[in-house]
Length: 432
Image 1 (cartoon, helix red, strand yellow):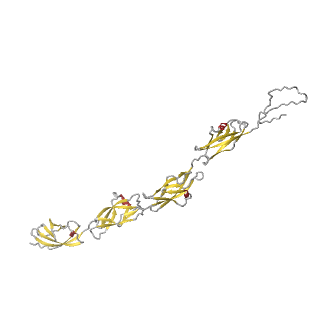
Image 2 (cartoon, rainbow, N blue to C red):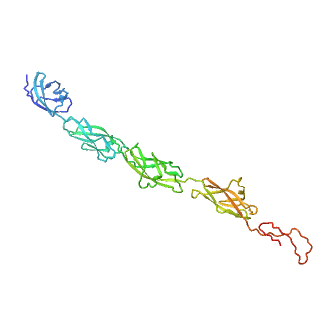
Image 3 (tube, rainbow, N blue to C red):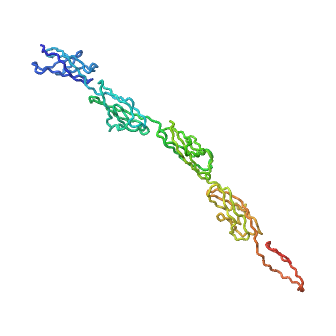
């Protein structure tokens, strides 16, 4: 027997895609017993669940528009009577399902606030609006290096490729209904060519008298870009006055002249380094020429004669040495005794030549000696000298008759004649 129930419209909210659940109850005050009803979806079948109906239709037909009419038929299980119902299904809010970022890289050294990319969300609800935030900073500390303005991801600090190349952030998108979705992104920092910041030279000195092409030292550059390549050249700017005295081959500084410490011992050059990207840096260097011990070249004696008959130790003269090394010191000795036996008649004290015996002009008036001068570095020069003994005025000798001459007593006015012979060239005897 029919109950006289009239078709009616029920409004309910669903969240898709899910199994649709709907409870229908008889109006209060009905006179018949509460018994289960079976509800049938238009075009398919439903499940009996007490006084409720559960939609078993989980295909795309459930992806309804904002609102859609669905027909149900209810039957009294006991009486097997059927009734038609018109049901309005209202679509509910669905959570976002994905986040996209239009670009995930940014150049190093970009200022804070530089745009990285724009976020967009995937959501079943057409026309929904979204809010984006960085989330879970405790687990994703790189979040602090970025900020989100609207849907734009921006840098919050200046990033350096050589310090860190990749950053991991976590982003949450929340829709207008408060439902949200989170996703992890990797932001890459791209390398930008940076100019060299310094030049080093591992040695800045070279020994005097070195030939052209002698290596002074090797250049190296400081650059933020790891593995960069460099070219070195001499630059014509302030500090480059002595550039012409040097050359650079590869990264090696070489001499382009023969240097003499005693002439000039300090040179100024200006060097430019250029990286693979054409950026440059310049620096002035001072190159020092180091002194090299050079052998003496000559010996001089300021006096080469001595008066005869002076006691041993009489000064003859003083030696001096010619040497390229300014202010060098020297030691003098008599040398080659075998070939210069006259050496034994002299001695050297300091740089002074002295007699070692009493010299006699009448015995020998000329002596040949050989002298060596040795500098503080052990290099030496030798020279032969001739020493002249000058004649002195010897005192007249006493005249002694070693033999008495017995002659007859001269007569008054008679002359006695005899001869005296001089034993020294320093005296003249006149016989009368």
